[in-house]
View 1 (cartoon, chains in turn green, purple):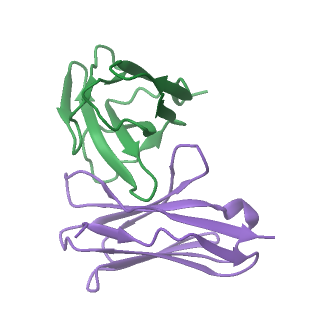
View 2 (spheres, rainbow over the protein chains, first blue to last red):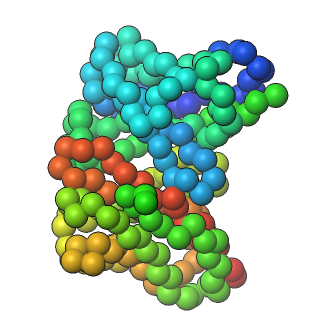
View 3 (cartoon, one colour):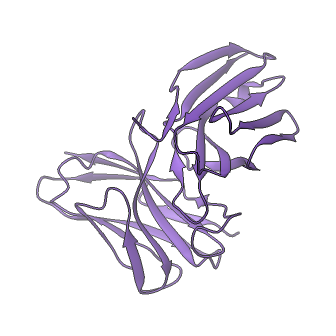
Length: 116
Length: 110
C-alpha cells in the first residue's frame, strides 16, 4: 500500500529542545517537501528536496533543518532557534522531480507539534 | 498583499446546496491552478487541476479559471456532508513553487 508516512502524529517540544519529525515514502518519488500549516494561513514551504543529498530552503526555513540521505526519507528537525514552532507539519512528495507542469503533490497525514 | 487570497470562512450550507469557493490572485504569470481538499487533521489531497483559463468538470465538482479577472472558483453541486472539509486553492507559474491560499473551511449540514 503506497503512500507517505509521517510520525509521530503528535509531538511536544520543551523549551530549548530540538525535535525531529519523520517522513517516509514508498512511492519512489524523487521530490519531497515540508510545509507548515497554521490556522488561517494556508501552507508555507519550509524545505524541499528534488534529489538525494540535495535540498533547498523554502519561504520559512529559519529554525529548521533537513537531510535527504535516502530517496525514501526526508526528516525535518525543528531546532531551538524556531521560537514559534507550534503548527501542523505536512510532508509531501511528487513525481517527476521539480516543479513540473503536471506535478501532483501527495501528502502525509501530518504531525501536530506543540510547545510544552 | 498576499499573492493568493482565499476567504477562510467558515462556510456552512445545507445538504444539497450548490457551494461556490473562490480565490483571487495577483500574479498574472500563474498558469496552473489546483484545488486541494483537506479533512480535519489529515493531509490535503488533489481534487481538481486546471491549466490556464476555462472550466473543468469532474462529477459534482467544477473548477473555473478566469485569468482576465485573476479569479478561480470551485463549485460543488448537490453538496453532501462528506464534502465537509477545508478547501485550499493552489497555483503556480511554470517551474516556480506552488503558492497556496489560506483555505476555506466548509461544513455541509444534513
